[in-house]
Image (cartoon, rainbow, N blue to C red; front, side):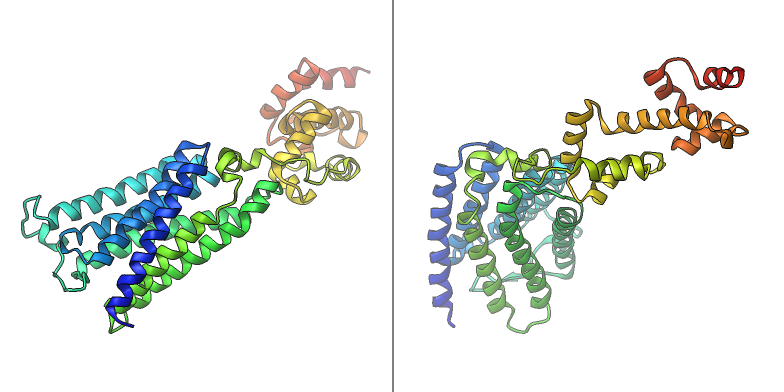
Length: 359
């Protein structure tokens, strides 16, 4: 393979990236923040491909900036789709990465004044093929940012496949697309590591760059169609368990919750019960709200108070203190019993004990 073939491949990538950019611009109707990053991704790839296809020395230092934009785009797309609560952290990482890249660009373009310390962030040389030779400090910084972005993606993957229990049409449609993005990310990480041990680095850097470009453009073009019009629904996917999800069997629910007295478990939680019932937490919450017109925590506390009434009448518990009785029904202490007791029955536990003894 010669450099001329690389030029043609970069030009092909440029054309494909522009097609993807127009496709997103025209078809994406809702979710302006998500649309912005879906546009930034092909735009950055197109710019990167153009610099490499024309071998413009004038723009060689912009390559790092557009590479950063590619990483930032992918990070924010996943953050918006799956992790709205992590937006601030993702944006912080994005700003940090882009700030350093801009600093690197301005320093190497000699726009910023240099000194002995800042010289560590300047490249060694640039050859005729736009391959940048960097020093050890820059290489460490580069791998640090690569690790930071990779850590985000690994965390996203872990949460999606171990914490989420979505079973809605949006999640089903996006799952395969998500798998392809993660596979691409893993290959890119491994490729960056492997390049450090190769002799013909310029050749393999081009191969990896083309893989990054073409794989991400294809993922943009092959995105699930519903993202164009319903992007926000997957962003809050845990709230969109649609009718296609299997109904919760009320008999099974009562078996776990009442017969086995799940509510007496001090660690009782919506997620824990959902795991036992093999349903999503949100669907279980909706089921409880619909059947009992209260939240999960209220349902737990109400049944704990009812059980408290029951065991107070039982001679087997007549020598138990109120604190011990509270722990028996699932509360961590007497103090945690008082508020639910008053809410669901009025008065306080000691009045009930006195009335029971008097009778």
